[in-house]
Structure formats: structure tokens, C-alpha cells
Image 1 (cartoon, rainbow, N blue to C red):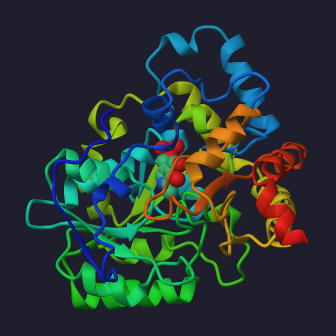
Image 2: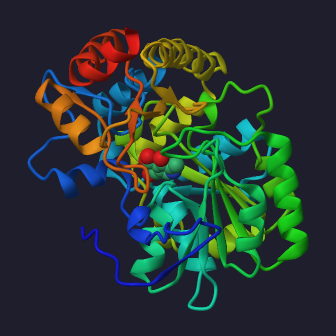
Length: 394
Ligand SMILES: Cc1ncc(COP(=O)(O)O)c(C=O)c1O
């Protein structure tokens, strides 16, 4: 996978001297990035604490594991093409109380991000997103030769809604990642709805992809899924995944929820619509996962919050500032280049994430592992950042 960028990227709303290129966010998905920049590294090496790819460290629930075991032990089913798409579509539609025409299955939400970029951007209709954000849409837009416009985050590292609104007028697709990866920040439900309403009025031909990959981790009281809004407005798509709170990243299941007309446009660009070739194990697992009672995601959110509070306090006590994180990862001003921090941590058996320009000289993204993993990880952080932490503590 090449990380180079061939196309010009226009950057708006960014202060003098901050002419950023799409290299900043035009890269691949989380785990693929490991193989691009660290070809000799298996994502999870034995004995290594892998807090680099925003996965749920606990994995899927027991019911999901049981269902996979049953499939494996149950004889011939995996030898047949699967009829499971209907079951999973029904289960998702039931969960959100929408119609099946509102649901599109995909191989991870990556496929939805790519399909939306394919369908809604064009040579004259750019992709608009923040800098930094999750890089899939920008990378794909550039791959197909379409322009990418980056919008600077505000001083709290959140989406700057006024700036985004201005940049989005006339765009083909707006990528609205909330919580945003890598900054973990969240824009509240009311402000997001207001933004979407204003954008539809100002630029009715622009589509917005609201990426809710980390939604289940949000603890801000002003949070709400934008699925109901998307159902009502053909210009809005919500992308969801089983890779994060459901702990199923390796099973590659995601979906879009949108107005039926919008789903129709996306469908042919996904494996489920194009070839009907989604993986039986992933679909079976996802069907069980979404039918688990809500305590599964509630427990995972609570588990993650305890860890997040612990790690946040650890950094704050040492004078380092994390953003107001609402996800299963943190973005921290460690005051030192992320590369040096990463390499030093890796030498001590802890993997943290890649660089995120324009903040790569000061900020690191750290996924939240289990409490036990993070207790070990902060010891390593302490050793690596030692000089800084002892000064701050003095
Ligand atoms: C914001 C965001 N969206 C989408 C994805 C894609 O994940 P998946 O294809 O596993 O659903 C990721 C992966 O880390 C992500 O961070």
C-alpha cells in the first residue's frame, strides 16, 4: 500500500504556515497501516501490549464465541454459500427500529466509507473532512482522482462546525467522524443535528457520512445516534461497525443506515450488494452480537471508562494533557515526537499508534487496553517520558 499522495489537496480555514497535505489523512485503515509501516510486525506479537489499533481488548461476548463454535462444529454449513445476509439485516433493522431497506451490510465499515466516497465524490465534487481524521475516505478519494479538502479542528481538537459548514458547501461528501479518530473528541448530538440541518439547507446536493464507529464508547450526556436523522434525510448516511465495542475487528462486519434511495446508490459498491459475498462466520457472529441485550455494550462502555479515567489521571498528574476523550483511545500532548515515543515504547513491549500530522511532533494516540495492560503500559510511559514526568512531578 503506498502512502504517497499524487493529488493536490486544498486546505481551508487553516492558519498561516499550516498548508497541510492530504498525506495527513489519506492513509489506509487501522490494521492495514501496521503492515504498511511495520512490514515485519504482526499486529499482536506474543507478550506485546498492543494499544495501537483501537480494538476492544476483551474481544467478543460469550454468546458470539458460542455461536462461532456451533458453526464450526455443526458440519456442512460453511461449505455452502450463506443465506445469512437476511438474518443480519433483520437483526440490525430490529435493533434500530428501522426498515431493512434502510440497512446495507458491509465488510467492516471500511466498505461503507469507500462506497460513499466512490458514489458521492467526483472531479468537481470534493471530499471534505477534518485534519486529522480517520484516513480511509481521503485515501480512497485520491486513489480515484478526486479532490480532498481538509478543515482544521478547533482549539479543543473538535470539529469546527462553522468552518466545516463553509468548506462543505458544494462538496460531494463530508466525512463527519464523531468521535473523531485520532483525537477521540465528540461533538454533542444537538450541535451535530444543527450542523446537518444547516448543511442540507445550504447545500442540498452534498452528502454527509456520519461515522459512528466509536459511538458506543461515548459517555457525554448529550449523545445520540444520528440514525433517525439519516432515515429522514437522503443526504445523511450513518456508518457503524462491529469492530470496536463489539470486539469483532477480525470478523470484518459493518453497515450503513440511510434513506432507502441512498442505500440503493451505495449497494452496488459493496460486497453484499455486488456479489453477495460476505463471510458466514462474521455475519453469524454479528447477528448474535447485535441481539445481545444492551448490557453488553453498557458493560464495555463502563469498563473502558474506568480505564480511560485511570490513564487520563496518570497523564494529567504528570502535566500532560489528553483531549476530552470519548472513545476507546486517547490523544495526548506528550510534548515529544510521537515517533520517538513509539519506538521507545515498542522496545519495551508496548505498541502505540502511528503519527498523526499535523500533531506528530507533540501528540500520541494511545488505545485503551485492559486495566491490567494499562497499568503496565503507564509504567513504560513513565520510563520513556521519565525526564518530563519527573520534572512535572517535582
Ligand atoms: C473512525 C473509523 N471508522 C471506520 C473504521 C473502519 O473500521 P472497520 O472497517 O473495522 O469497521 C475505523 C477503524 O479503525 C475507524 O477508526
